[in-house]
Amino acid sequence: MVEFDEQRDPLIQIGIDAGKLAKAIDGKRLDTTKPLRDEVDETNKFFQALGARMDRIKTRFEEIVGVYDRKKRDEQRRQAAEAARLAQEEADRKLAEAQAAQHSVVADVIVNEAIVAEQRADRLAAAAATAGTGPTRTDAGTISSSSPWTFAVEDWQKVNVAELRDQFSVAEIEKAIRAHVKRFKNTRPLAGVRIFQDEKTRFRG
Image (tube, rainbow, N blue to C red; front, side, top):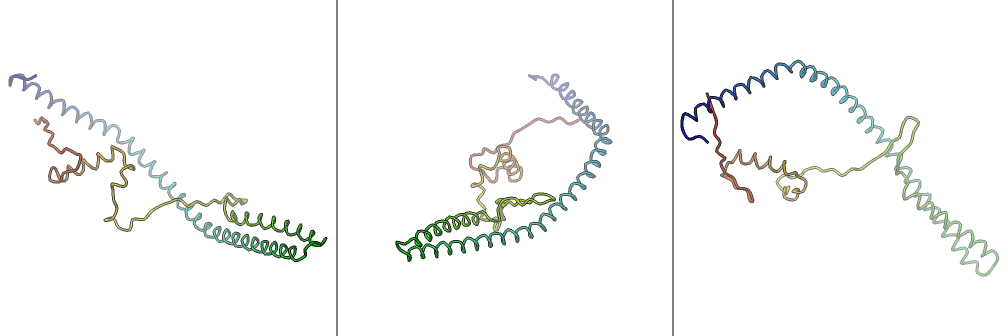
């Protein structure tokens, strides 16, 4: 507790000296570590540039192969769907023949053929449902496909930030509030936020 000027002035001097010493220490730290930091920066730049180039090559080749692979998958789906359709038509034809040949030995044979044809049609229909999916294995490597959800903002004015509240951490929200207060001070209130001046004492020599 300071009660007199005689108590105050030494504290001011010590505070000013401590501030100067802290600045000098930080400057010495920067000077001492600069060669190391420069070396690390240059090393990082080299490997980052090399890695980025390899990533670009990989991405571009994935795009090229992806176009070809999608065409193959589309053709596989088309062929599987066509095979399933023809099998179902054959099963329907056999069933119609069995219904026409009532109460005869021939009818029993045709019914069995119709059952077998229907089973084959079911298998081909199931195969058609999954045709063109899953990874493609090649001698060079495996090709897989994914369809992650993404977005494109079409009108920033219509984006409701309140709907994204759960996606922000407390630190991110506080950072936005801090920027708002720094820019607008108390001229633009925020609901739920108390904006005030936090008075602090500073020393200057």
